[in-house]
Amino acid sequence: MTEVPPDIAEHLASPDTLPEWVRFYSAYPTVTAAVQAAGNGESVAVFSSESTAYVQRVVLVEGKPVIEVVLYPASQAREALVTAYLNHTDPEAATAAILHTLPHLLPKGIDLSGIECVVEPSNGPAPRFGFRRRVSAVGLHTWRDYDELHPLGDLHQVLSWHSTGGSIAEGAEAVAILRAHGLPAVGCERCGESLTNRHPSWPGTWVCLSEEYGPRCEEFEDPFEGLHELDTAGIGGPHAPATRDLEPVA
Image 1 (cartoon, rainbow, N blue to C red):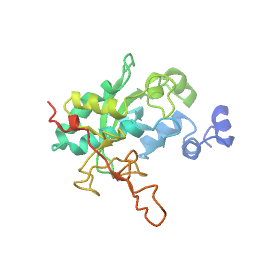
Image 2: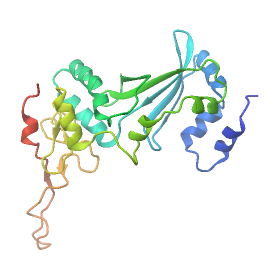
Image 3: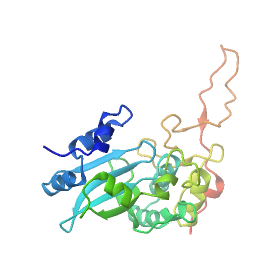
Image 4: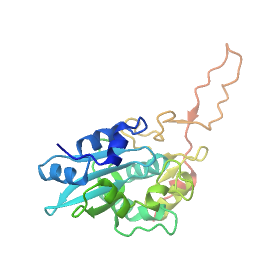
């Protein structure tokens, strides 16, 4: 029977533990169990977006067990990256430029020692971009050992949905940084959302990746709203790409 350390047993018994972690810790209550499973060919991974979107995996690299964590920009930062990627005419060049630019989206002073910028395949119209850290699992037995010896630090915080300090650039700031590094990012003049006119579902139409608004600008002043109920025909209006963002990038 697989050993379950007391802290993991407590997590599993808590109603506050997210389902993905219950599944992961139930299957792999120790690093040792996860390493054994990976060695047997199992896919050992958990994705969580409780506060920061990231995946934790145990993989074999050159035959040696490694705990791999990839942290992903989310929300408006992710939308800026995806739309800039779609706006580019060369996917390979776009990928290379984004990987180069990712660190520049972070607040100054963030320690990226042992971190590399990576791209991963996705089922969407653009690949996933993130920050990857790999730590040898040799000599680690419990997840507490791993967490105490290798905390994720400031990077985890600045990518959090509710960062209390500095955070990754979003909106107009992200667009400006991406454009400064040669990526054709475009922002809406009115609402500030990152835009593309190359979305597979809306080719030729400027859209953001917001599920709620998409091709509609939330700041559009519709002249047909607020009329008599027999006259109203307000349906919102389109985004207005900022003129400065339509200029060619260097």
